Image (cartoon, rainbow, N blue to C red; front, top):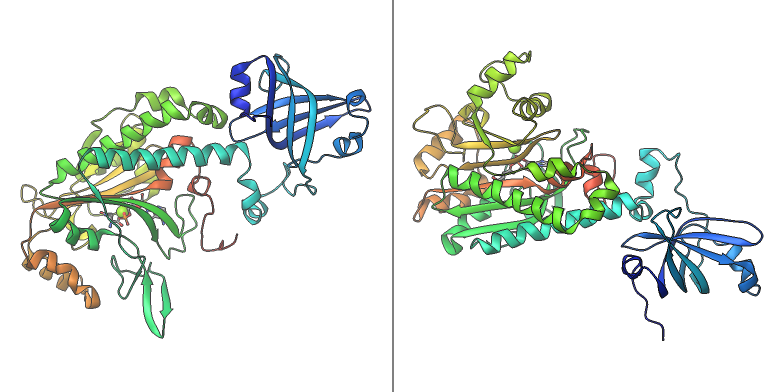
Length: 429
Ligand code: 4AD
Ligand code: MG
């Protein structure tokens, strides 16, 4: 039995006999020769077949279409003219699975590519993006484990909405109303009384009709919560875990970054700590740069992306938003009354990537804030038990995984950072 190796391993070997297998990436030929660029999960390589060696099989070889699966054996050598610098002179070929005419070509628009997403995932772009995504996910898990956080899950289905608002998906649960989770946070603020420091990597759902490049209706949410943590501890975990993941991608996904044409020198420059500014300073900076904004206004994506740009095209933490812009659970900064112990981490080109805060530990204050905002927690009242039974100072954050991955890859939309994006108009495949 021949031992198949990956294309990347074959190229490392560089000479002698090799056996590789994969899918036809490109093909062209004449009456006498067939050139096949073969693709596997590691790279592409040019294979040449001479008709004189394959008279019996020539009909099959000649009619090979893009994305047919094949196994080849032959001799590899360096060839500067070949797409990846190597070529295999094939002595044996086995057509494993023929392909119909592949329904993806250069002229497809976004809608058609969306319909064929399961096939589009075979592209080198998507394959590299998904590998980077996997590294990022693993790195975040690894960082949390190394730092004493316990991974703990919450349900995606709930009888009450957590963050509330109109952005919650409602569904029929045996005749009762149920909701898809928007965040793990309410559960986490209770878990931490058990495990101290907790994190999760799970999908969150948002019924947002907004069709921006930075929103999907189902995204993967990296959420962190820790007892006894304050705002500074919280920001430190956020920036360190981000830098940890970037470093791991730089180490393990060189080829993928290359395939995507990502800005590696820019990624290498990212170091913690990130710059910290207050909301008040951010408003001044925006005004100085011509934005029509005043203290008390929420930032839109133009402001968020602008800020990251004005502060050296780098990550920037914006803290101390006016309480009116915040949810009832964000704490108040007693040194700057009227503002929150909260932050948004803004990323260049993306805008908000992380949202976090030191939470309000005082039940009375929360109840007041809820009243003021006319919110009835209803079936989510259990959340407040975290404040009723031994409330402690604590903090946490949520990072949108796709926004982070898209930022690393230099993508213009998070839809390329998730295998099967869900948007208001896309539910299949
Ligand atoms: O700002 P958000 O809504 O904050 C929360 O859900 C908090 N409960 C998190 C926490 O403190 N545990 O969401 C957090 C992050 C955002 O900063 C953004 O990166 C991402 O989640 N996000 C989305 N990503 C893609 N599509 C959407 N529709 C998103 N909504 C939020
Ligand atoms: Mg937010």
